[in-house]
Amino acid sequence: MKSIILFLFLLLPILSFVTISMAADIFRCKKDSGTFQPTSPYKTNIQAALKKLVDGSNTAFFGIRQDEVKAVALCAGYLNPKDCASCLNTSIPLLLQKCPNQKIAAAWRNTCMIRYGAPVETTYDLWFVEHEVSVTKAKDVQGLENNLPMLVQRLALSIGRDRSSQLSKYGYGTQGYGSPPQSLHLVMQCSPDTKVDDCKKCVFHLSEEMKRCCGGAMGATMFTPNCYMRYAHDDFRTK
Image (cartoon, rainbow, N blue to C red; front, side):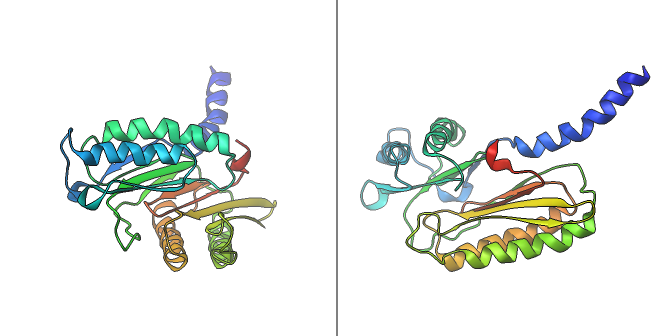
């Protein structure tokens, strides 16, 4: 009996960490965006625009006038093209099922995001913010809370420096802290249609949200329609 209790005690932190490493899919239908009929050209245009994303475009338009649809894809900057396509292929039918008639909708998986809606001049719209957080606390909470904002600042300042790169709105970095030494891993990224200034605004917003929801946690991820941020104490890029 004692050995079983000891085993469960040792297993609990591992299970808690897996909670954040294998985040559940997130689907959001924007309720105030209006709806369309099943036979509407808007539905056909959604499907056509989403197909362009799977074919390799990160932004796609389809249709004309009031039925025009814009679709956007974001794959984690460390993801290879094959895994990116697989993530999008899995997400698209699920999103269409979860949001069958909303004009604006978005889906987040652990390594990719898709959203669609009518083209608008202002693409920065944080109409939802979601998070996944580990229930396990860091060994050095104060050290984490001191170093995470510094790493956020360093990566955010690098956004947009090389505007010719497809990864100009992507940042990944590490920072050591604590005794015994620990390695903090952080990634941030914005959708391809988000302007550089809005991208920085978005990641700093998530940094503040992270302080409110996830203080001292071993790992956390924040999702919005425009950007995401994730930190952990292991290199999640290799998983």
